[in-house]
Image (cartoon, rainbow, N blue to C red):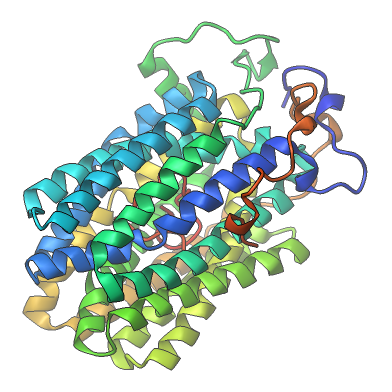
Length: 474
């Protein structure tokens, strides 16, 4: 794939890792700060709704409203992200997310929250996330040389998971001590600060191509939205391994998010308590962090096939919730699930970023997200009534079965098992802006906020989490 500018400008010195790139450092810092506050958001929102009405159905409606809005806007978010400088888009969406979460926090803290108001704000938040997700996913290969994609994705996800560990743990304690409203306020503040750091990310956005990937050397005038959507669909549908994995996660996400985001808090309230639920979710992020460390060292050629198979392991924590809702066992189960799913997440990002032309990558990510998210509202809305009719345990076990069957069905596809990932040619490196490395490695005073896509559960507000880091792939 040809890139704009001289390839030599995009090459890091031999032996240098992703941290040699200043744009990558700024991107990692901004997204980690957002994750610190965002890790507490789904826990806070769930308990805010339960405090308000005590109804799993109401909770399902609130989180599903965000998912529906997210799916409805995602394709257009991909077009916007391929047209505009991605770092500018991320600044705007971070500030918009801060505003919506601040509004939710104000309603909860003042005691004036209602289900209709929470639904409206969830819709707005889902739309914001839909615009920013394709940009945040597609910007990564524009911040490092192509040869550094796997370690860059692993480091980025490791940092996000570290932020999630700290954020979920502190957030759960904050929510248990002073109420869910303050957890939502923390989320709003983290988005606002992240928007400031996104402003320092400087990367050349992908040049549009004419013909079979030929680089024009400049950005061509944007075509119609429908034409650009068709171009993205052609890239998406022409690769069997892409749409098979997306179909897998349509089912996996519906089952996992319904079980964890809706039924999980109910099990917690009936057994081990809210503070422990936050620590259990944090255990999954510990597993994700350990998985990121493993991905930095382990680089299998058939990484995607291995990752797709390991997705089945995420059924383990759901089985634990159903059969043995004991905190020590659930901590272990969630940790193992996180470690397994992270192998898929790194492999998926690397596979897309190495095989999809950069000028269409955001649109392919948006089709990926639409397919992955489209059934989430179904899972969120249905699990509450099903649990009421048949009991929580049978519904949780059914969700676990869906995850296992979908994962092994995807793994049976030859193109998924046989896809290889590796180091691309040196001339595939993206051009880097002259003098980009003059930016400091970490913003002054930000060291304490930078730790080493649980991807945030559905209903969370982070507009920068890609859909594949965990079964939520949101």
